[in-house]
Length: 349
Image (cartoon, rainbow, N blue to C red; front, side):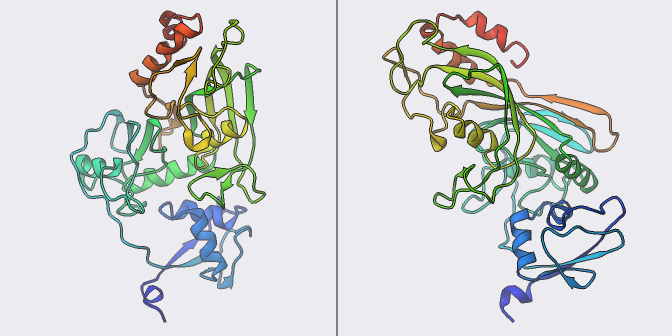
């Protein structure tokens, strides 16, 4: 027996009538929110998961009264240690915290990242008053935002709230609304992108819509504002890609980089997202645009049922001033003024 096998722990979970009919891998991911579904599928393939004593398949449907047993190999130990990093709190009670995450900060420690994260800041502020289900590296963390994305991030204060929030996310009952500035002209006023997303096997830090093995993903959008030099009769230098479109995007699933990869696959990458095809230098009318040091992508609003009371709750994160100012700086090239920008953004500032 190897050292890793000797350190494995066995967990057992009963299947209730409410859980019956779910896929095994998805159900296990809800029971073990600190373990990724991909890792759980690997554990199942390795024979480390049994249903009522029998070898299991990731896709099989569980039944009420069954018992699921999983032998989890001990992962490398990571822990979010307290650091005095400022946090902007949008909402707070005994069950739930909503943080206004700034761009440029990672949500929790991971490979090569041990400090400077939102989780480090949360431990400093709340100590042990956070959910433990995500493990010591992810105290209270229910979902994530990309490093370059700002906005609403939900955090569970206790284990029961964490479980309920995971159920709400899994049931797609949490409404997540983003603001995104896209390269190019979106022809229609509203639309949807329903393309499965998977890891890009050639570039492991990227996701792709080109693999058959992808997981279902749905993004909807509506246009808020178009900055279209072609319609204004202006010339557009390379890098501007026919102007920009400001959209409100609804995230109906929570895949990694979902909004970024979906709009990139449609030929409209998020401004500043060079990882998915946005130009490194943006020029309009032969003039360079101001530097954009981050993604023009913001998690503006989350609507959910409160994990304890079930009452409707809406949490908003104001659009960072830097994103508004960058958009205003483009207006001389598109015959539109700051007042029009602020009118469109009035509900988000």
